[in-house]
Amino acid sequence: MDNIVRVEKEFDIIIEPGFKKAKFDCPVCKLALAGLEDVESVENYGACCDCAQFFYWPNKDRWKSGWRPKKEQVHEKLNNYYVVKEK
Image (tube, rainbow, N blue to C red):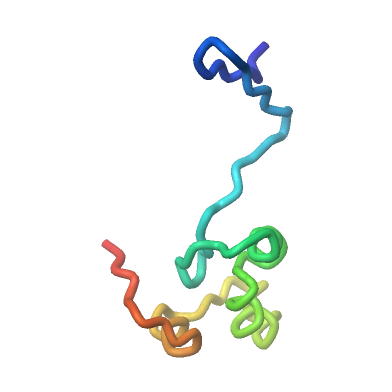
């Protein structure tokens, strides 16, 4: 079976067909997802709950056309106390 991952000799992990890994961080603010609500929000809107509230809903039409807030806008709105450095 292609969907079995053997982990040591004691047990197997069976991966269901169609399984996909969930992301651990928000594509907009880059912060770690806090829980199931954030995971579902990323799946539904492409942003964690906070980013969806501040950026997705007020800009829904623009968002669907591909608009995303600039990094500076995200940090200003969410009042992040650190800057995510991207290479």
